[in-house]
Length: 306
Ligand code: NAD
Image (cartoon, rainbow, N blue to C red; front, side, top):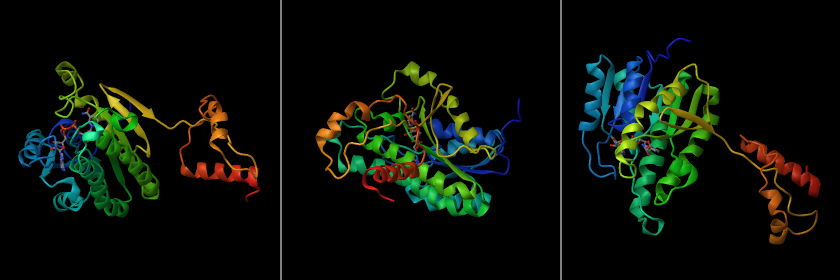
């Protein structure tokens, strides 16, 4: 058994920490020595209204157990304000957990502009805004840990969640690029797709499943990923009920659907379809450079490029 994972001296900002998963992250970080900014706008699950109560309650809970926490009530759209609270109260920012979220589920044809925009604003723009505000501080400290909250609805799609799926998979792209840009500053970024009982899931899950899938069975992964000794970055994990798994891309060998000096046609794609979709001998690409290199070799083979 190794040493317990501690966060003494670290400052953690958890967005949407007034309840559900965010509350659990905040409590667990505080229990392990971190100073925590408990951010929550305190609105409804559809993104309406606001209140200071949600964040205050969690701050009180942490302080009652001897932990260090302060509240912030701004919307994640205004990332600078959230990070300002961390700097003003604790003098630094080390870890950002982008967790705040709402739902506006509708079947695709019924998604209004507002349903679309609000979801992008909270999940995608919010995570961008908070992470960008924290970034210069992390660079300066040569240390940072960022978590983006994705969803299986984004990874696989889900009926009635077109707006949410788009934002949630967008966050994986954002995380991947932050992992690349953060590498030389010891800033890591990972995405998690959690499943837990909360006010967001109680509308779609039976009550016994909501009760059984505790946020406590998700948070430890997020803490592990954010520890100073953890180097994992640019990865995506599914987590729920105590089960944790890593996801990755898989690519078929594929097929070249044209010959030198002849036009490419839909028929040649049709004729190669079996090969294009055959996952035997597949690979697991991890960088966009691999694609560029491969395309240059295809052009070299067919057209004498390079
Ligand atoms: P939750 O509703 O219990 O908690 C979300 C919190 O975010 C709420 O307290 C809410 O007030 C806060 N919030 C909403 N908009 C905000 C804003 N603009 N600024 C600041 N705070 C805001 O939900 P949860 O289930 O704990 O979800 C947490 C995150 O996990 C969300 O991003 C959600 O999409 C994601 N997620 C959850 C599940 C699940 O099974 N619970 C599955 C996949 C993804």
